[in-house]
Length: 239
Image 1 (cartoon, rainbow, N blue to C red):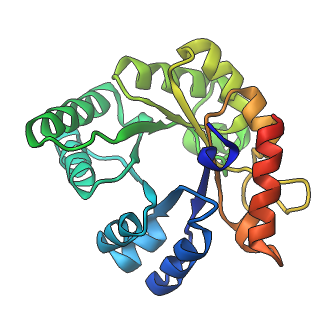
Image 2 (image 1 turned 45 degrees about the vertical axis):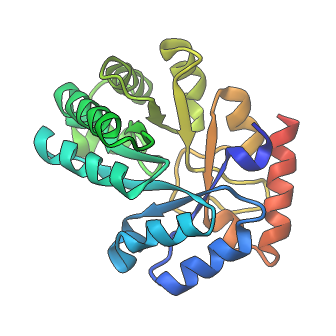
Image 3 (image 1 turned 90 degrees about the vertical axis):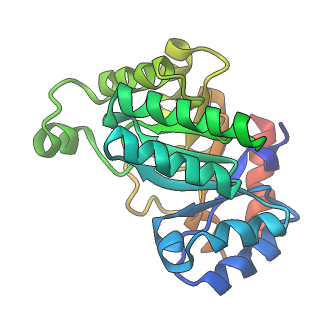
């Protein structure tokens, strides 16, 4: 894939109109747009439809985490919306992930619609080892926990995981070459880390094994966002 095809632009805004302006502006440079909790709550499912009408693909980043039946139904609804990929929390367990995948696959086959990629969220990039241990109660190391959840997602038949670039090489070694790794928390050398704890540059993340990179504020907050996208794409190609 070319650099721009590996880049997912995060539309982390609460204004539907502004989000679509961003899609129109960046569509010549970016193919995939992330719709997360903030925008989906503000704009609803129509946001997915509007982005697709403009030729963009959608990564629906709602991190489903509930009982298996509920998550499976949410996954089927996402597939019917025509999203390119969506995610569930891997910590929801094997049965939840398997049920979601099976119901989505069966629905797509029966209704002749494209099957979205389904990803398992491992550990949020805003979380540190200390938070995982002292607040969540996970006593083993962060790397061990990410490795375990990635293996669980693979066992459930998911297409890949969402994980920090710092764990990408480990996941690649554990889950194989065909397993997708989508990496948020990407920051170039000229941008601040904000609330992300485990960050990497685009070049570093791709070299560690990431397939797709999610970037939002690091691009949108630049004085010349289009130039920033071009620089990021060039850096990704150099990896």
